[in-house]
Amino acid sequence: MRLGINLGYWGLGMDADNVAVAQEADRLGYSVCWAAEAYGSDAATVLSFVAARTERIDVGSAIFQIPARTPAMTAMTAATLDTLSGGRFRLGLGVSGPQVSEGWYGVKFDKPLARTREYVEIIRKAMSRERLVHEGAHWTLPLPGGPGKPIKLTVHPVREHIPVYIAAIGPKNLELTGEIADGWLGIFFSPEHAAMSLDPLTAGRARAGKTLEGFDLCPTVNLAVGEDVKAGVDALRSYAALYIGGMGSKEKNFYNQLTRRMGYERAADEIQEKYLARDYAGAAAAVPHDLIDATSLIGATARIADRMQAYADAGVSTLTLAPASFGNSLEERINALRVGVEALERAGLA
Image (spheres, helix red, strand yellow):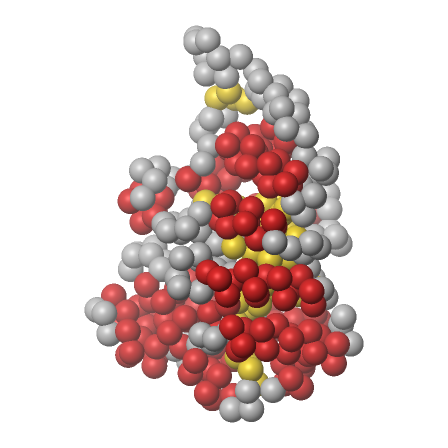
């Protein structure tokens, strides 16, 4: 099992430290460094910056938001990043959510599965450097009746195939991910609830005539290092409450729905109700201890190693450590990276 690092969003006051964290992850042999975007920093610029300051570690978008860019623009960006990084780019995609898609990008959040399928198809056509022709429900290239003509990408990516990952939570989106992608970007993944994600992914792979062999299962997990497990759980409460309670509207919050499917219906209601009422402390307190512990790496090195083994046994191939729990100081974040490697080696997974 490989390790990754997710720098999260740029511009939150830890930017200089983020470069140092990426460089240390590179030195320690981490497989990939991901960067996120929502409606602040964009991931492409951050990844270019990180790639220029690292040597071996892959750089990946987690995620490029589908409503933010046309598929051809995403293909251009992916090819450029792969070239600039010397073949180290991984393309992570996601549909975002209705509030961001419609409120920030002005793109209707409808038929996300069909849109994702077409988006990936166009990207792959463009990156293969064939002349781009596509007729679909969401995009037609070239536009009919005008001066447009089939064009092919002028940039030559370092690799013939840039791996595509999709961030998916719901069963149908997971099935689509298994069918059309090279890897999955997961969140709030628990080895004890692995079938919730792996069954639809496996079904999607089967539809494409494939298995999970070679498919990169890449969930992001928070890491809280220390002897006091309860203190570690408490340190992650606000992060969990933000996603379960506040990422989306009351009617459309994918993380809240995931929490429900994991068996925490009452807690999901309480967290969301309090968060939307701006009782953030109350929402954090309502997140079950067991939920955080099951979806995170918490404790001393030996306990973290045991949980890493559970993730590996569940089929995870790249375990990405999230930055939210690393603490505020650079020293704490660097220490967390090192503990991650020590735990991986202790579990015999390196």
